[in-house]
Length: 449
Ligand code: NDP
Image 1 (cartoon, helix red, strand yellow):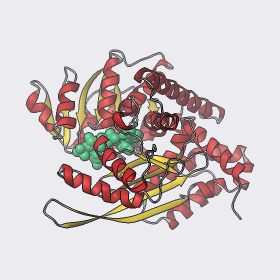
Image 2 (cartoon, rainbow, N blue to C red):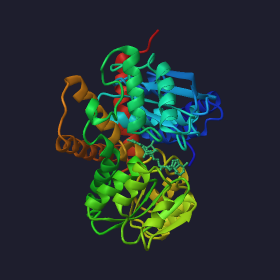
Image 3 (cartoon, helix red, strand yellow):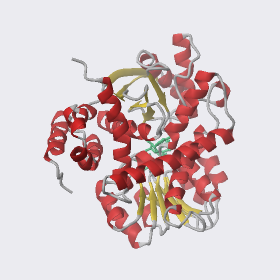
Image 4 (cartoon, rainbow, N blue to C red):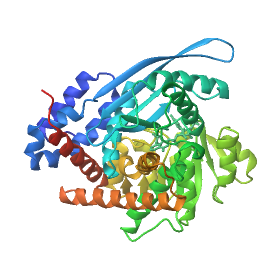
């Protein structure tokens, strides 16, 4: 779909020229700018203040060398990044991704998305993202530790509890956060909530591990309820088998659904009896093996190579929870052909723009990532609040707040969609609701002359 507004099209063309060869960043910017067409018509003050020209440019981009020594005594060199995207409404906040595909384009798209997502949570957090092209797969514990320490030795110069508070993401779980936190503390000699997703013995929040997956299901359930439906009795397919996917599977099952498929980057498993979460946890979290192992251990289940094939498994609800652009138009057509009624994005930007068009044009309930997966960062902000107050809340307290936050994100996104002439379109609603709060703050804070 082409731009209807020439002012926004001009901004987008400049973004592409200035950030050449960054397709993921272009994709994320294009989606948000197209959603802002009705805002530009209603709010000349935002145009006059140059908010949109400013918001497509990260405030600061940090790029650094991470050298470390592997178990054979060989020197290894990776690239470290931190994109401090926007601090209009709070300190930069967003995860650290450790994956060989990491580059400036991917981290800028994630930082840009994070800015609006964090705004949607209603909490005072700005947007950021970081990570490295380091591949944790196949590395020993000691190699992971040496990498994390080297990475933090540089990152520590740029972050702080009131400046920038990173968290986990793909490849960065509790183990990596622990090693990074230990190094930060050694260097700075202070015990502050500089990272979220910490272990429970040193400042982590109960329910943070579960938050993104649980939050995704709270959001999706709310979206279904608003359309006189629910998870109960539904068949669910979830891509990925990491933090977000596993916890989404747990909550969907608690809501009365049957989760029949999960995947990793190698392929997918189908278990028509409903996947056994204990077996998945043992394979993925304890033994750190491939998901193919599941089919060897659970009679009646199957494993198929090629992770994209998961979208051919017939289901009522699809929850993409692996990575960006994992669900394309052909997969969306297949899902719709198989009778899917709702799609909730757990990963960041998992559906291509063409796939989103298929869902919207076919009236499928669609929960976009920046709204549906905001539960993780929202709970990270709750972890920051507990750290500042030197308190820790119970699981039930954090979970109840998470549920409220996800309900409010759903309501605010639906309301903004209606107000701006796109009732029922949560992509447009979430983009507008997230944008407006950041825009108001940027206008109030002025431009530095
Ligand atoms: P994990 O590292 O725990 O799990 C990632 C999962 O996705 C793994 O199963 C992995 O398989 C699979 N995967 C990764 N890359 C690919 C690929 N190129 N193709 C197919 N599968 C792939 O990460 P998380 O669960 O934390 O994150 C998943 C998504 O959710 C990401 O988009 C992340 O940005 C987003 N997210 C995470 C939040 C969090 O709180 N953790 C918060 C909000 C969003 P394999 O092991 O084979 O690589």
